[in-house]
Amino acid sequence: MQVVYVDAFNIEEPLKESCACIGYFDGFHRGHQVLLDTCIQHAKKKNLASALITFDPDPWTVFKHEKQKHLMTLDDKIQFAQSYGFDIMYIIQFSLSFSQLSIQQFHDVIHKLNVKCLVCGFDFRYGHKNSGDIHSLQEQSLFDVTVIDSVNFSNLKISTSRIEPLILNGEIEQANDLLGYIYSISGTIEHGYKRGSTLIQIPTANLKTKEEYIIPCTGVYAGYVLIDKVYLPAMINIGCNPTFNNQNLTIEAHILDFNQDIYEKHARFFFSNHIRKEIKFNSIDSLKKQLLMDIETTKILLKDDKLIKNTRKLF
Image 1 (cartoon, rainbow, N blue to C red):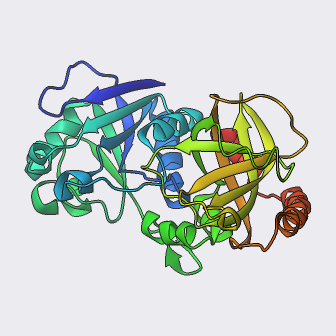
Image 2: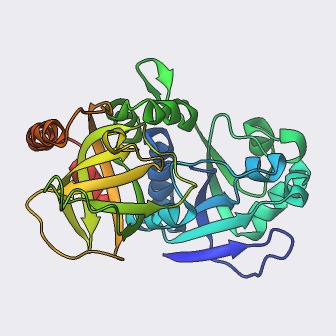
Image 3: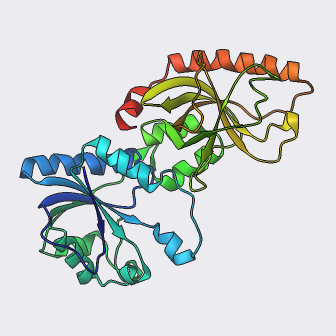
C-alpha cells in the first residue's frame, strides 16, 4: 500500500485515479467497514485504485489545543488499511487553515487527489464551520459521490463515541461486537516489579504503551499477546496491584504455557473478555489462588472466541 502525506495547499500531481472513502476512522468499527467495503468494491468495478483518505492530527487536538485519546494510533490505521486491502492511503495534514477551506476549496482538494468517486457516511461534514455536507457533495460535478447510511447495532448507530465508554467501563465484549474485531493496544515489553516471576511464580510481561490509547478499565481480561506475528493466549491485568500498594498503572500479561525472553520486543495486547474487577487481597497466597482461577477462566473463554479469526486478518 502506498502511504501519501498530503499538504492540502501543495498537492503534488499527478496521482493515480482512485475511488476513495473519507473520514477520521478512529477504530475502523463495523460502520466504517461498510464504507471501506463499498469503496473497494466500487474501485474494482470502475478499474480504479482504492484509496482511504484520513486526517492527522485529530481535528479536536487542533481546535482544543490538547491531546485526545483514541482507539487507534496513526500507525495502527496504516496497518489496518493495508491489511484491509487498500492501494493508497492519503493522510491530509489537518490544521486551522485546512479547517477554514470553503466548500469549493475542499472539493478542489479531493479533485487534485484525482478521486473519481468519493464514498462517505451520511453525517460527513467538511469545510469552514462544517458548512459542507452530503448535499453539497452531491451537488458538485468534479467527482461522483456514494453516501452510506447509518449502520446500527441494537437499534443504535455504531460510532466511536459509543464504543469508547464501553471500553473504559470494561464492557469489552460489547465494544468488540461493535468493532468487529478484538480491541488492542500496542507497545514495548519492559521490565516490571518481577513479583510475578518471584513472589507469585506466575510470570508476566509488562507493556509500555502510548498515552494516546484509550485503556480498558482496571481488572483482569482474557486475551492475546501478539509477538513476532504469533498470537499467544494470555491472561491480562490492568491496574495498580493494590495488594502491593502500587501507585502506577501497569498493563501486564501472563502468557499461557510460554517461557521466552521478550524484553524490548514490540507487542500488541488484545482484550477479548473481561473476567473480573481489580481486587486487593489479604495475602500473596490468596492472590495466587485467584490468579490460577483466572488462568483457567481465560482458557475456557478463549476456546469460544468468535472474533479472533477476523482479528488475525487485520493485525
